[in-house]
Length: 195
Image 1 (cartoon, helix red, strand yellow):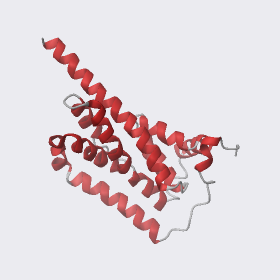
Image 2 (cartoon, one colour; image 1 turned 90 degrees about the vertical axis):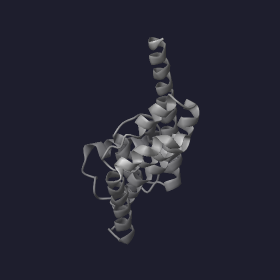
Image 3 (tube, helix red, strand yellow; image 1 turned 45 degrees about the vertical axis):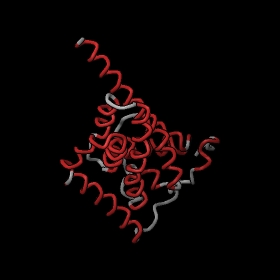
């Protein structure tokens, strides 16, 4: 393994998977339960738009709390960016998204041996060994399904939860601000076409 860069100093060395115990079972069950509740109540969750900035926070919290199953939180941010202050929408949505991503972290913390055999796992783990928390922030800033894997890996690697949360918050906030401004600009563009 290469010597980590200064940015990677907060990451622990990757250890062998821990024996499966009660804390692992609780972590996995929590992540699965949150995902199932979101799927069951998805129709009721569409009412979040009426909550304005709080709705942006909740939509992203819920949308990012699912594992594997996509919930369109960014659509709410895009729509709200067109009707509210896009900067404030992004600043409200980012922390919600970061908190939602803790389900992936918990799944990784609880099921450290589950995804070790996937090529993507090893690629992201190598990036995280080399560049540290910057990888989490960059992957969080780009809308992609890979961030769930990065959250799981962060849990497996036993990165401190609050380090993961801060890096995810930075990236998800930048992402939400960009999406909200895209919503505002697209609404302005459509309005100019209609007039």
